[in-house]
Length: 114
Length: 111
Image (cartoon, rainbow over all chains, first blue to last red; front, side, top):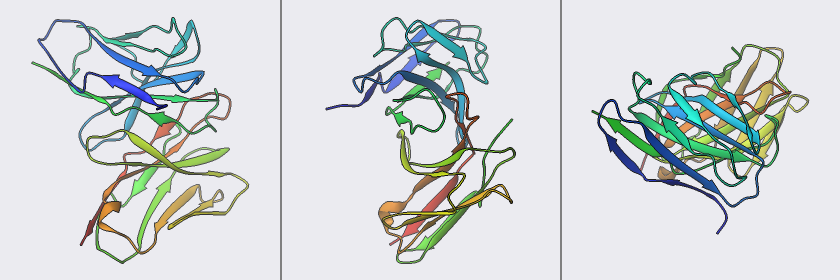
């Protein structure tokens, strides 16, 4: 089946630890995105990548890092510098690099940091 | 920043009724997209309407776009309990891949 997978579904970490969220797609899409969603809120863009080995900061990149070494993978690291890391994280991909293309979303990872 | 804002924030209706959600945005757009999110899940794309279109249909969904008022509406006709979800509009600068999402409308359809 084609699609986007995110793992794990739930993740618990202690404050001060870095944590990496996985995102894999087999849709052969060029562009990939990471969003953060807080309760009752919309999505905020953390990072996006329009091509392998290139990525751009979104609106809330501070405290996060990404890599795009392979077309199908776009892992997100939540560092200890992120002040409020507890949130629902969504990964998405699109076949084109422009905003006119629909985005396909993974099921999300709910991160809790205590 | 360019952002969609949905109205109302929450909507509760009976099964069989129509549901209308509105989205306003701030700057010129090339297109506007609507997404649906079931609780605790990822988003699913519903429909994309281009700036030169005024209305678009997909099954029980009808989307309108008024670029002069910088607003769009999503109408779900003959709603079902399974339509219960949050609905988001999204817009983005035409020369980038960024989409900016509104805060969403939470729709509850009571059986």
